[in-house]
Length: 113
Length: 113
Image (cartoon, rainbow over all chains, first blue to last red; front, top):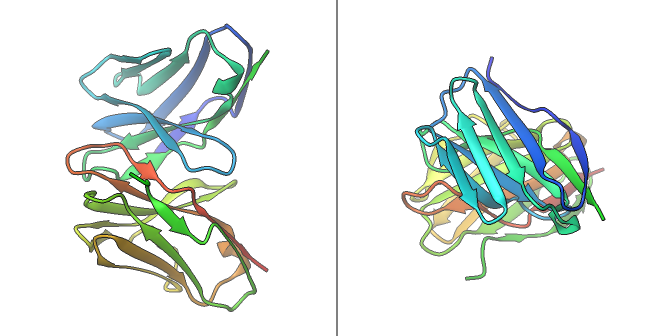
């Protein structure tokens, strides 16, 4: 069966360190993989999209890698800040229709001052 | 742009009552999605529309759920009759033509007593 797993339900790190979140999937052939941020009581907010033929994407302090052989994406936040504390969701798009995403359960990141 | 607008933000109702959730997508976006989020199951796609036409409603849990999109700027999700297990946060999202990122509303938190 198809499955998306975000390996850590919760991740606690110290301010200034790099946070690394993992997203693994089975029985999918995603055309895209996306990462979203969700704050309590709010809707998810898009962060980054990476295509199947891209290995890495960067945006400011964020970096995403995508390994279709390992069926894994890593999401990094460098020089983390308490304001980065939130739930981070990975989502797969199999390319059948833009926006038809399957989401992982999310990782709750807490950055301690 | 005001973003995706959902109403009501909170709804508390009693089992058996009809519930109607409303969504106004971002102007110019041609696809609209209804997702449901619970602690147990995470974010699940219920139904999506392209150019106001329902494309895939396989995620709609039961016949008690129905969705409409009478025009490009308005959609409703109706639950009739509601049950306690329908308690969740319901998100509406829209995506522009030829892009992959979803823009979510702030959600409608439904509690069925």
